[in-house]
Length: 201
Image (cartoon, rainbow, N blue to C red):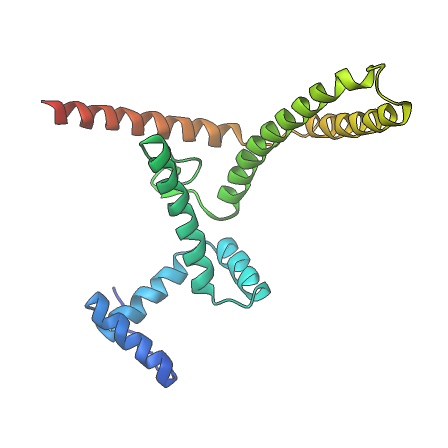
């Protein structure tokens, strides 16, 4: 049985003005706006909310600005991809479901971070290999002064050490999470193909 709550709080004239504008733009009552805000906050994973609040505090920004900025950056990157490649990129590990529920919070963070680290590692290792390959002919170039060759050898050794260190790093992605993600992607692609075929009829 649904319960009825009575909520009372004080707000500044500026906050009242902002609330009134929101009500007019959204076509909602004051109670509906407040209720929507409550369900938005309570629907978030505690880990996500805690991290977002800590970050907002560190940059002296409202929590709403943190969420809005992060979301708009994600949307902007997808739209930029569509402009360049002609289509939206496929979803990554975001919006993956476990049964009927979306995976979120710390579990989602850990999987997405590991996936992103894997991509960053591959890119950085490729950059290092190219730099190392470019330096190698210079290490035995008889036309170069000894001090210049010594400088190149030091640079080569430093790059090789970084490459060896990165090669030893293996981001951990839960195999079950990856399998679930790939299954979701397969289903998404199949539905896209089916819908596209229906449009051609």
